[in-house]
Structures are given as structure tokens and as C-alpha cells.
Image 1 (cartoon, rainbow, N blue to C red):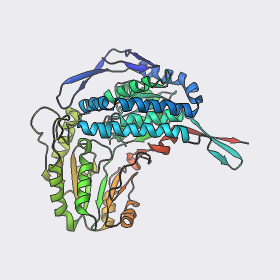
Image 2: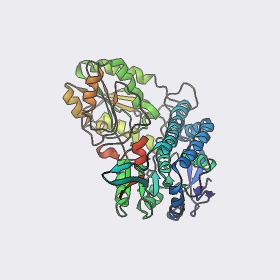
Image 3: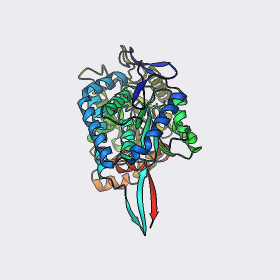
Image 4: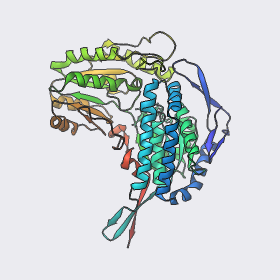
Length: 468
Ligand code: NAD
């Protein structure tokens, strides 16, 4: 059994219960983590509260140095941590190394730079001096989908700002968070500045979200859970950052390079077995090009080999758990029942051990169908035809979410004009690559607040006016 990390030490949970960690490819138990209790959460908050004044008073350059060293430790362990994530989440090893470790490493380094460069004494407003100060104790509650990246987004930004942190990772795929705690310990972070309490959402998550000594709660997970976290946080008027679900659209305009747009959309929909919040899980194609787009999408989907995360030719690993695979299978069955046309994959799992789902493509999808509106978080792409650009924009904006999206057109200006009309936190224009310094977050039910870069840092700062 692992231990909790509180006040600079690895200690047993006060409860003694554990959760088995299951490798979703082999279905074997590979580890066991503590089910933290409310008392554990309270102890971690107390440690973070006690450490706060000294950490907040540390020069930003010194905080930058800690983060730089943490980046060096993480880089030195990259392959080991990628293996842990491949075994715990089921991500193909190459993806685990490139995305699941490579991205948080860039984020950690970016916050080391920002801690050194950000102007915490922001300047003047009239005669007043405006200063930015650390907001206090931050609680970070994260999803399993990107099990190292999501904790790092929150923890690195909070530490750079001068906040102390309690991290509660998901009870699903929790091992990457343990790796992060080891990295920060080895980087020499003072006791109490970072704390890790694993456990369930209703116990540890709620204890943190409602704790009066927590000043900021940053949550990544499902929209329904975010609503609960925000309600609990309201009692003590905390700052709340919510990074929630999505059902993002890739809008392919009639003059776009169809083959490139379809291929990139399929890649996005199936990345991480479709288990990413920002997946372009809806492809919108003009009626005149629709049949050709379906043919291209099926061909691209068939190139996504499903299999063992450690095999070199695997593009799609298993889903994270048996329960999650069941949810995804039910969504596929519902799509068929509602009249969408299954053109690739389906609910029948591929043979062999592991919680696999075949890459699945639905054609003939209509706005309002459940598979078009609700997040599935699995390798399921829905293809929707449209006749006018206005209709495409309406469909793209037609779900309660607004997290990500893409627009493809023959020229950038036309694509940009449509991108500006999407009610969503980020839009990739003609294949523009994801940038880890740009603000990331959602409109509407996809969330409140932003992560990454300067915007992510500022979620952990209070602004004070000193009237002179
Ligand atoms: P989830 O909401 O079930 O769990 C997220 C976290 O909240 C976990 O740590 C869980 O233990 C905790 N939790 C559960 N109940 C709680 C409660 N009552 N109080 C406090 N905490 C509680 O979500 P999940 O299955 O881990 O993640 C999938 C969701 O996350 C998807 O909707 C996905 O789109 C979203 N997501 C969003 C982003 C983003 O940046 N917007 C990134 C990744 C995932």
C-alpha cells in the first residue's frame, strides 16, 4: 500500500482502507493506494496552511529555482513515469512519453520561467500601486484522463504564484500523481508546501472543496461534479476554477483540404482512446463532401490499431476501467438505437483481455441525438452534415459545452472568421497546433477560469491596490 504525502513525509492514511490500481490492458492489480479520510484531508490543509506564510514570502526567483529543479527531476524520470502511466491508464507507451509526460514537463518549465519573469508588483492604476499576492492554500482535484498533466497544470501554477497545495488525484489511475509527489519531494520543496491525499471524491474531494482554510479550489472533471464542488466552495466564498467536459466540433468548410481535415479530426477524436476533454468528437462536413468525408474517416479510423500499450504498433490502448468501457459501450448502443449509422467499430469489444473499444465512427448523425450532445469520452466520432456555414456554426454551438474546436477552410481569414463565431475556449484554425502557453478553459458548461500560461498563474493570485 502506498502512503499519503503530508507535511513533507509519507504517512499512512488514518483510515487504513485501500483502492486497488488495475492495469486496464491486463486487468491485473498492479498497486494499491490509500483511501484518504476526511481527517487526512484536514491534516493536509493544516500542513498547507502552516507552510503558506513562508512559501508566500519566498522570492519568486527562489520559487522558480524549485520548479526548475523539479523539471530536471521529472525529465530524468520521464521514461519510468511514462511506463507507470502506460500501465495505469492504458495509454500507448509512445503517447505516454510524448503527451502524458512531455506536455507536463513543458508546463512545469514554463511556470519556472513565469515565476521568475512575472511582474507580481504589477504597476500603477492612477495613484495606486497594484500588487499581486499569492491567494493562499489551493486544493487541486483532478480527473484521470491526463493523470500527470492535470495535476501539474494546477500545482506548478499554484507554486509559482506562492500558494501551497493539497492535491487529490482521481481514484482512477492515481499513480502519476504519486510520481509527481516524489519529484517535488526530491526537488527539495519545503514540508507542507505540497501535499497529496488520494481517496474518493465524496470524502476527500468534498472535504477540500468545503474546507474554510482552502482559498482556491481548482477542479478538473465532469460538469456534474464541478457543479457540486462549486456549491460546496460557495459557503466559504472561495475562488473556484472549473475545467469540465466538452463535445467539441471540427467544422470543415467546403473549400478546405478535406483529406487533411478529416485525418486530423479522426486523430483528435481517438487520441488517448478518445479520453480527452478537448477531443473533436463531432465532425461537421458540408453535404456535398459528406460521403467522401465518411469514406476518408473510416479509412483513417481503421489505421488506429487497438492493442497492448507496450506494443510498438498500438495506436489505441484500452479504456481506463471496466466501468468506463461499459459507459462507452452503452453510448454506442444508444447511438444505434437513435438511428445513427455505424460505419466503423461498434459496441462489441475486440477479443482478448483489456477494456478495449474499437475505434467507432457514426455517420448520419443529427443534431440533438444523444451521441451528438453528450460527452462519451471514448473513441467514438460522430459525423454531421450541414448545408450552410450559418447552420454549421449553429450546430457547433448547439451543445451546452464550449471547450475546444477546429475550423478548416481554404484560406486562413475565412477559417478565422468562423472560429470567432464559435462559443468555445479554444479553436484550432487550419490545424494550428496546441500551445501550452495559451489560456486553456471552457465557455458555458465546460467551465470557469483558465489554466496554463499567465492566465493559469493569475488564478492563484489576489490583486491588491495600495493607495498612495
Ligand atoms: P469526475 O468528475 O468523476 O472526477 C473528477 C475528480 O473529482 C476526481 O478526483 C474525483 O474523485 C473527484 N470527485 C468526484 N466526486 C466529487 C465530489 N462530490 N466532490 C469533490 N470531488 C469529487 O470526472 P472524471 O471521470 O475523473 O473525468 C472525466 C471528466 O473530466 C470529463 O467530463 C472530461 O471532459 C473532464 N476533463 C476536463 C478537462 C478540462 O481541462 N476541461 C480535462 C480533463 C478532463
